[in-house]
Amino acid sequence: MGFEQVYEYEDGKRDWGSFGLPREGTLAEQPSGGDVARADVPTCLLSDDLSEVRRRVRESGWDTCIVVNNGGVVLGRLGRKVIGSDDDQSLEEAMTEGPSTVRPSIRLDALLKRMQSNNLNSWLVTTPDGKLVGLVLRSQAEERLNSSTS
Amino acid sequence: MRSIRRDEVRQLLKEGAQLVEVLPHDEYEEEHIAGAINIPLKELNRETAMQLDRSRPVIVYCDDYQ
Image 1 (tube, rainbow over the protein chains, first blue to last red):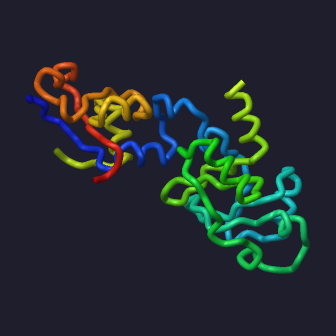
Image 2: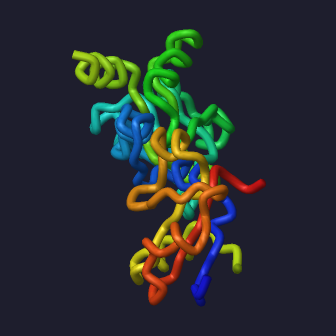
Image 3: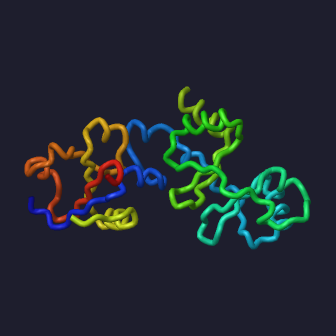
């Protein structure tokens, strides 16, 4: 048909959406996990000092911290009990490895159902290659959904 | 037609490439990559391709790798 430069994006729009890239359409207009994920959730490296991480997280007002590597890939999570305690342990010993994650494109109502059925107050959002996007807080998800339906 | 990945798509878009979703209309309406137009594969011919600019790269895509 006379076109010299034609390419195929082989991974398609699912790949695009799973990395939180811009989409349009009736489904895309509905809020997603990526829309409300808190990118300001505290993070730390495995090599960080746990007592220093605890201090920093407490001062920030958060009660959790995400353990990432130098490339931003999620390795684990330091939960409320770890952040709130002063147990003498290494960061690696203290963290919960391999937390459950969802992609940015997940519909927020579906994510909220998941949090409710698992009795969780937050859920990690990452890209398909494991890089941290942010943390969705259940309270903020509920607020966003309530405001979008009113 | 060369297969490309996401980063190259983004680069080509910055350079003015045209995005075409080749899935059926209803799937396109539900969700498509921002800025993409819709020419379902069954409707892709010389006439429907006329809406595209021949001087600019064209990137076609569907749902995922199949």
